[in-house]
Image (cartoon, rainbow, N blue to C red; front, side, top):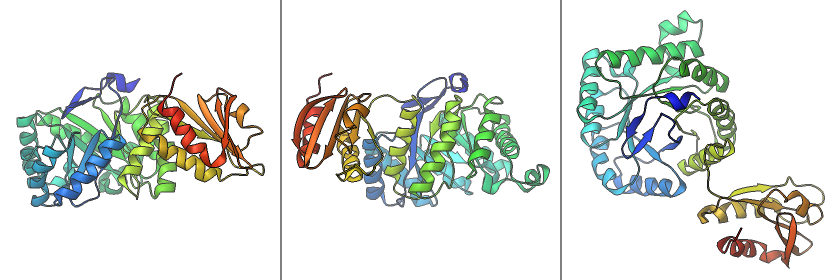
Length: 351
């Protein structure tokens, strides 16, 4: 797999590339200058499973806030910089574990060199980001539009600028809101660079459409062994990004641990609020450190059989609930006691 052979990069206390686990990244949506709100959000994201956090640095005050934020969190902090090279340098000086820049937006080579020199002095990785929405005019003309080939050429050009300045502590990010273009670009670049790749479908959209596009795009890319860190970009709460990223990694077999909840589709036999119950179960198991599968079934007729592949399951209807292990009914309980019965079983789980 490509990710087994990428360069190992240290980001704070975490390592990516070289076959290390794919890490989940998210981005705060607070004003970075508001230290208490930003810290509060990052700590919540940590609890949800976020492993790298990125903060926007649009002002010098935001850059300076990183120092205090870093003292109160436990995961690597990435500073997101656009245009002003002085903010990148200030972010590094205030303890950023990595910076994200697009060299094309920074300006002259002297300004890029100033950023590279500051990163080199502290051995801070630089994530070189290229976005389909800001592809250089000459590459759009060369490839007759925004294309995967153009994105790759742009990214590798930016990397070469920094390499020529004597620095190779780099991560590459090439993003597009076009899922298939993004997938193709990653397939092309994976065979042309040894640098770790941060993968995401940019501007993916709302919770519904963004999750679908991200699942398809990230699924295609990760399944090919490409990608060292990921972000599910959603127009929504960052916590939802982390939950979705964890599920994508687990579905692809790239992440172990945590309870997986499966549930049947509703049908005419369903006599309980299956949708509500399944959502309640999914929320309820978040804090239970087991690596098992839980089934939520809406029919006592087919529920036991359908739940055979799960370690434990529940089914309900007509006021009666069933607790099921490996397809065998082990307990009947009132339907309104199903959720608490399941939780008690999980808290005292014995395989």
